[in-house]
Length: 295
Image (cartoon, rainbow, N blue to C red; front, side, top):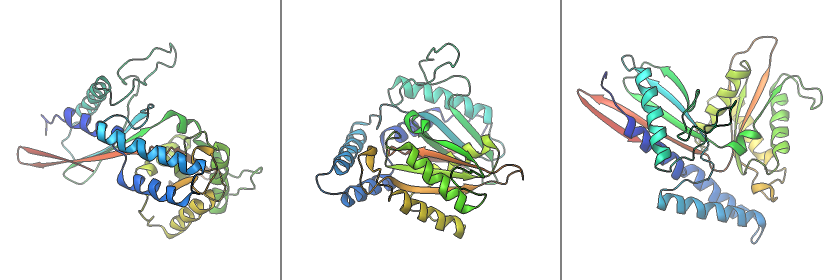
């Protein structure tokens, strides 16, 4: 494992995430189009989105001009160098940028200078998790700037929304986040929600929920029921695709939790646009042989 070099494999992972929308997302968008009134602006927006998805896949070009922040979640066994993997990921992101799978997005916050290759101070984002399995698993999420701008965080209790420190309070603030976003986040959206933690951990957890497939079921029954209810009620707000009105404001809601301090109760909402670009890869070992598979 010392000589493990996955740079080219990471480039392919970026290409897949940037150019090929996951099947569950495409199926949800197709279903949403069928639910909208024929000839409506909502149907037209979804039709345009679906045509764009098809062209991007066929031409291996980015689904959206804003290719977003690359966020890598890496799970690895003992014996794999995280420093080496981090260097390979940075190299792969630079190569993917040169090959136009990513738009140069990394800007120095003080000078405003663009690095030109999507590398910089803590850019791309990487989270490493050592686990007991004997293979490497990598998830990649490309988080666009427009939807990031309407992501938000609440501190409960919230008197203005009459939201207490319970799941009803969570429900109220999540629906408020959708209402406040209107069409600014390029909906229909997928919402990643985190309950608890400190401010930083809560934001990270909310984005990790976006890696879940739309058709999965939360193992916690209370959270599963909350996800279903939020999905239903958010779509009753009438905001619709791109804010044009209609039946489809969100495509899914995913909720996770963290333990928290008694003094704090944060709820973070990661708003993801219809271009919920995610991809994953597994790296398995058999002697000196390394096999990489993608999903």
